[in-house]
Image (tube, rainbow, N blue to C red; front, side):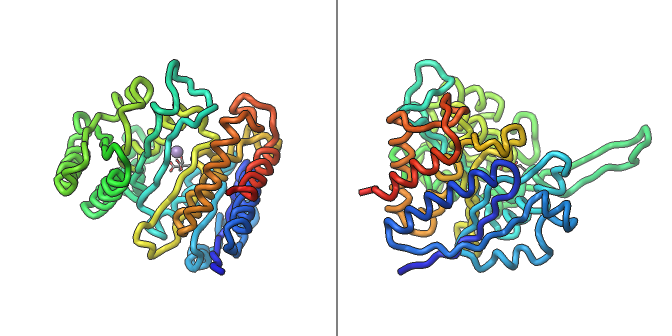
Length: 356
Ligand code: IPM
Ligand code: MN
C-alpha cells in the first residue's frame, strides 16, 4: 500500500475552512482507491506571526522538505502586512522548493453560470501556466531618499534564460498532451522594451522545438480583453509571474467562479515537494462563517493526487465536482446557492467514496 506524506498548512481566514473539506475528500479518495495519506499539520499563519514574530519557524522549509506534497489553504490577514505574511510563508515555499510552474486550469463546468453571455463549457477550457519564481516578483530595488522630495522607488524585473526557458518548455509540453496543441504567450514588448522582447525571443526559440504546436502572442492588455470576448481561442496560455497572476484570476472569473479555481505550484523535476492551493485568498469578509466555497481547495487536492500518480483518484474527485455542479448539488453563495462549506465537502466526499 502506498503512503504519501502530505504537509498540511491551512493558513489564514477561509483556508481554515476549505482545508478540512479538502482533507475530507482526499481521505475518501484514499480509502476508495487504496492508498494512505500521512498528514503533518502546520498551523503557520498570521496568528503564528502575532505569537512568535514569524510566519513559520526558521527551519520551516526543512520541516516540509521530506513531504511528498504540500496542501495549503490561504495566506494573509488584515493587520499583518503582505510583505510579512506572504513573503514569510507562501513565497518562500514557492521559491525555496523551486516551484517554478504555477499551473491554473480555467474550465467552465456544465451547470456553472459564466458572466459571458452565450458561452458554454465547450468555449472555456484552457490552462494558465504562470512563471512562479522570478520576473516582476523580485527583491531587487528599493526606496531611496525616503521622506525627502527626492524620494523614489524601483523594483527590477528579473528574467533569467533558464527561468524563462523552463516555464516555456513546460507550457509547450503541456500543449503537446492536449488535442488543440496551442500555446499563447502573454507579453508587453511594446511598452516594456527590455525584458518583454527577451521573453518573446525565448518564446520564439522554444516554439521552434515544437513544430506541432500552434503559437500566438498578445500584449497583456488586449489579451485580457480576448479572455472576455474570445475565451474559445485559448488552450495553454503562458505568462510571466505578474501577467500569469492577473490572467489566473480573470480566467476563473470568466469560467464562473474564483471559488472553484485550483492551482498547482510545481517543481517538475521533483527535486522538491510541489504545493497545491486554491487560487482564491483568505477572504476576511466571509471567513469564520462556514459559507465559503471549498471546491477550489478540493480540486487542488485532485491536482495533488494526479501529481502523486493517483490518476484514478484524481479523476474521481474531478468527476464528483462536475456531477455536483451539473446536477444542481449543494452550492455555496458565490455560485448562487445557500449551502454551507461542509455541505459541499460532505457531498463530494460521499460521491468519491461511491466512485466507480
Ligand atoms: C496568488 C496570489 C499571490 C500571488 C499573492 C497573495 C502574493 O495572488 O497566488 O495568485 O500574487 O502570487
Ligand atoms: Mn493571484
